[in-house]
Figure 1 (tube, helix red, strand yellow):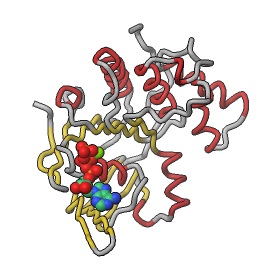
Figure 2 (cartoon, protein in one colour):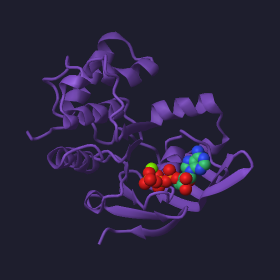
Figure 3 (tube, helix red, strand yellow):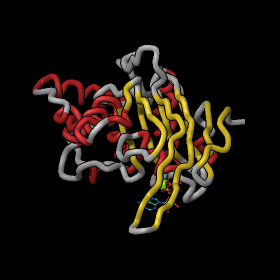
Figure 4 (tube, helix red, strand yellow):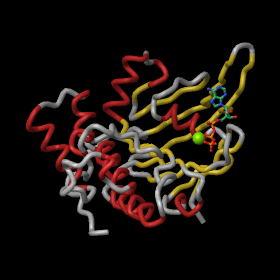
Length: 244
Ligand SMILES: Nc1ncnc2c1ncn2[C@@H]1O[C@H](COP(=O)(O)OP(=O)(O)OP(=O)(O)O)[C@@H](O)[C@H]1O
Ligand SMILES: [Mg+2]
């Protein structure tokens, strides 16, 4: 892949002196009828600005549950969650939607692009919700696509792009609002090995430029690219540290 240059990202997601993520004693119990299931059993996790963290664990260990909480897509049952200093546990649905839009960029396994919109329009979407208009919106979305090496694919719809290119559009969309946190759930799960390397190379660059990245994966070689690996098993963190 051509070298990517990502010029505008340095220090742009400043969060003051707070950790980006601060979970204390977080529990999550799912209730279906009269059946309760404790998917997270007291998770403590602090992630500082600029860290690149992989969350690993076997199927059913609670990774997606944790991701949904980190991403303010679901609420916790016990404990507390501060995101960039804000107490997220106290917020209602509308406030959470605002936090998601301002603070978090999401990248999913299935890309989650809108098929009828061009790459440019897909990347503009978070700015539409953020009420950025007109020429500024277009300029920022164009710059984000240039950052991920897709400046020549602005008009293409997702179906006209390769899997790796679609995921790069998704990364551009995640970054266009300059979020404090880039949250990726199995971002290479649907990619072949060369596209996987493209995306991981992009994450390496974003990390080098000071982005905070949390990547959920069950693949050891993907997790090895992060500087810190948090392992989850049966709803608890079983280890937290360097890779090797
Ligand atoms: N909405 C729900 N209601 C009840 N139980 C749930 C719900 N969502 C998840 N669970 C249970 O919580 C546990 C953790 O699920 P989770 O999806 O977080 O696992 P995971 O680590 O992401 O697994 P995978 O690697 O397979 O994606 C599982 O036992 C699952 O069955
Ligand atoms: Mg999962």
